[in-house]
Length: 259
Image 1 (cartoon, rainbow, N blue to C red):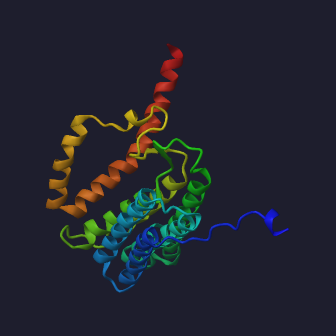
Image 2: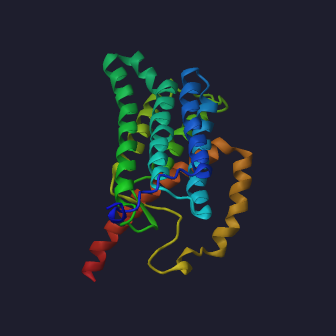
Image 3: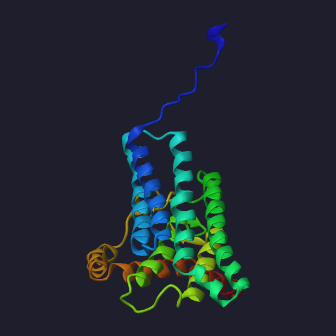
């Protein structure tokens, strides 16, 4: 009777990719601790470190053939901390908490905006996990949670170092808008370029024009000159790219019907 039983399901847990996932989780956790201690620059940097680790764990798993269902679920939970809870709490401690000085109602709106961001990040990750095998890999449906976290933390980093002369308290209403917009973009149906190449036209679709490649050294040079502000500009441009493309397509559709 034992021979008729199906083979036991593999319970292997691969060390290498999960080490990167754990490093990203640690970076997100450290960002929360740093923000609670008022060290907002290092908190923002830690979230970017988590983003680098998040990009490496999946690639390492694919290159080494060590992908597993455990790794997928662990990565998703780590992302919720690093790109959901950490950015929300960093933004709250740096700026949104200052809304309480404008009244009790605005104080509640401040922490509700932080909660909205964290909740939308959780919803975005859950939707991604359920649609990963059915959507076009060239696009993200909704702003990806690492990109939303990058927008939030580049905003904090760009001003928290004091070089521009504005504090989080002075920018509390701007921070409120950034948090809400980032949250809503994550759960929207707007498409954003994933930079992964296309699946419809084969490997050739992953090629990029030479001018795009030539711009890479220029971008790196600018980032070295003023990294926080460059990251913030890149984050804003990428966040705007989806809505602009959506509006462009909506404008083109009626025109094509008239023709």
